[in-house]
Image (cartoon, rainbow, N blue to C red; front, side, top):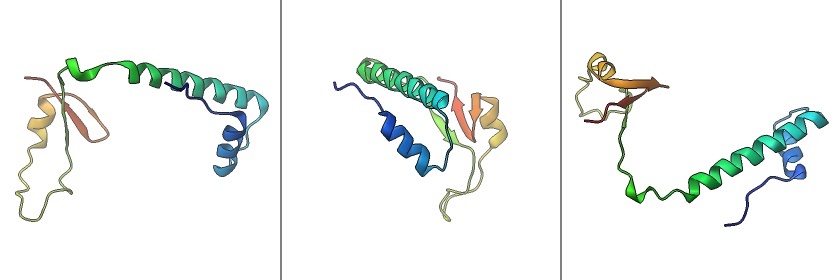
Length: 96
């Protein structure tokens, strides 16, 4: 696998496109952060997930996505009672 990285020029272009003013120290910090991120991604890519079974699943707690013909009887309190955690309106359920 080809090692991923971001060049100094790419970082400066990105900063320019986002209207960020960054100094030399911040450039070096961001390059190091990107290297760390890419190393983590390479590690994750190398993990064989075929042998693992999912232990959690998420359910969106909002009802705006329901079709008109679906009942709006979502019991949010019951869902949250059985949740391991709630992040940005996403409930992570306990594995049965």
